[in-house]
Image (tube, rainbow, N blue to C red):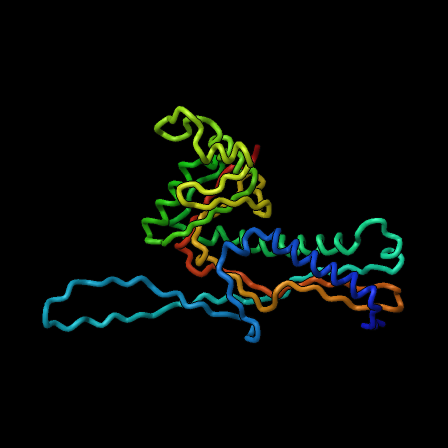
Length: 284
């Protein structure tokens, strides 16, 4: 039967686990800082985000009454649920380990929760407005395709900033192209400053005012394609009922300690026309 009493030495060990887990989670999650977060701590498990329609103003003759414009916002509801992981660390394993076991467990927990959060968020890309769909099966990711995404969002009066997230294998062709001289229509005689950055660091940075990120949690289809996204942060919502945490509980009869990592969160599309689904090739 579980017994919650722990020694001070065990408390210190799990303080290290908590610190490592939270650090790893924050550093590993690509998507969390790129979307809009709604803190629903102390509320129910749902948040209803109002989505206001676009209305038009018109010219009015002097002395004439304005016609009434009814504004009926819709709602996007996000429901939070629990995500968790648990392991049991025996006293013997703890005492005999030659590795810094606290850091190892913390890192694994942080990575696992971050992966789940990111996987759920990137899984929303196919839910962007169908009219904004770009790319196709077998299409390579290019600067031209990113420019089309930027033009698509601009035409819808979507304000900046824009961010883009693609699978690393999809980014391969873009990086390769950017590091070659004359990748733009003007056939520049030398490599661009963006290309130099890619060549030196492997990171693209920003193209056409779009900040680019790579995320290996985007799934690749059996045909070798992956769905990335170019979007405004307000297009996707992340509801946090309870942020990532680590808890421990002593199980004296097993001479072990249960270690549990969890987060209560939900995700959903807020404004579907504020993003573009971009289907591109994800094979090398």
